[in-house]
Structures are given as structure tokens and as C-alpha cells.
Image (cartoon, rainbow, N blue to C red; front, side, top):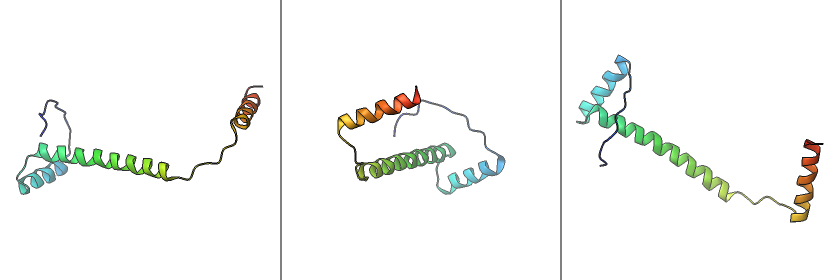
Length: 84
């Protein structure tokens, strides 16, 4: 396990804290360890969502695009319309 070097303060209502203490006692661990595990799970969930989004993007069919000259003309036309 990494060396713990940072401290943070989290305020909980009494009901939530008592549930956390009871879970920690049942699992024979500390409240802090449970909080760290919950943070790890939340961050892992974000990472999984990012990976899924990237995989979906990479699996998408390529968009049809014209030749470079056609694209250049289209961009110039759009810029002219936007900034007459």
C-alpha cells in the first residue's frame, strides 16, 4: 500500500457516520480504510467510463470526407458566411 501522506476532512451526518463505523467494525477495518476504498471505487468507475467512451469512439465508422481542396473551400465558405 502506498504511504499515506495527505489528510482531508470529511463531515458526515450522524446516521451516515454510524453506518460507516458499523461497517468498519463488521469488516474489522478502520473508517478511514473504508473511505479510501470508496474513493478508489468512485475513481475507478470514472476511469471505466472514460475507457468505454474511448473504445466507442475508436470503433465508430469513419466519416466520409471529401478531398483536401473541397474541405478547404468548404471551410473558407463557412468562415466568409460567419465573418462577412
